[in-house]
Length: 514
Ligand code: HXC
Figure (cartoon, rainbow, N blue to C red):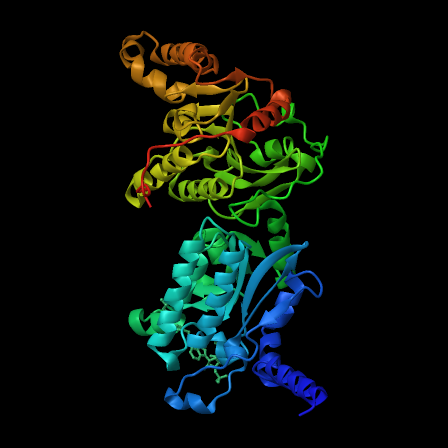
């Protein structure tokens, strides 16, 4: 056969495969407001940068008449491309082909691109849109998932792994996204659950919609499984691209530095934090008054809002921010915010991103609900994560730093490299009211006017202990600084810490309070 005809045949074969599950299935996909796998990849990557592999892979299943079925590309598209000129590996499940269900060859394609990503030290982006394990392929499908989970784990902390949920992600399939660094969901499109509505109805007799069980809002507001929520697939891809500008391509490298920019003058750092410790404010305004161009990229914005985490740049370089949020529950630490904080610290540490902690909290949230939900175990994760992290750790105490909260939020004792405090900082074992009631109880009770005495004792306590100078006198705080000096001092500290080098005792790994 002459070469020309062979090329024609190749083109024909390609055309056939990229039809996916055919016109009807594509129409159904579009009617659900979803794009096809290849459209998604094209929208995510730089123009014309996508190179597809394994286009002609076919399944090898024989049971349940599978030998009579052609599943183009076995329901998944894999390849490489670029985002802002930087290489990435990508896979996208094609729901139009057998519901994107995962059989042996489908899994083999995904694991092939995962292996490439790890070997080449480039980020992996996985677009999930699948009915889960391909039922007809039985244990081979389960084996496929196992192979994926193993690679997710081995790659963790080496290359960034991003999961995008653009359809169902059902059954054990959910554990791959759960093992990755960032999960993106889209309203009305993402559905993530272990057991679907049918099973729940059969086993528990309860009726529940997929949306209420594991829709995008459920995972970005209630479970915390999702890190980013978007209203459309397009917005979701914009979010992923923005994230990619903040993170390095692997743990061997640093995130690309951008041209430094000053914060916008609209954010006046001196005027954000009220003098009255009971008055709330939005800590995001403080972050925006510090970071380049006031550009703060928040993560898990809709979940555990008492802590704010995310990326910003300082003189062009990415930093991770961990901040109490006085607007929500006075910024206390609880089960969820502890998990959110600890995981982000570990992410930053794995990928060479300095951590800036802004502190203003009354402590851990008291109460039986939290105790029984395991606030001891979850809260310990923060202590572990900060202590273990070896990236530069800079802490600024804006206002309250009481009790366990003081220690947990990047204190000197967990090896912060630099600790600064604003003049209004209150660093003490507990708030003045609680402290005075306990240590002066006898005097208050025996006073002619107990209420007057109580107030007097609270003031006395505030005067003596609720300030930054006791901690500064002991060197736990390195400098008491004016708010307006914060950015300059942090930039200086980041610069000094650039060559930081620390080590711990030799061990295989620790045993964190997972
Ligand atoms: C084989 C599947 C499939 C599956 C869907 N399909 N899921 N084929 N195995 N798991 C096929 C359907 O038969 C159908 O084929 C096509 O995909 C489209 O599916 P529909 O049901 O028509 O689509 P829709 O109405 O949109 O519903 C989507 C769905 C539903 C909600 C995902 O298909 C569903 O509930 N699927 C099963 C989900 C599930 O329970 N998965 C868990 C499997 S166990 P045709 O030929 O008709 O177009 C698991 C364990 C893994 O995953 C454990 C790892 C540790």
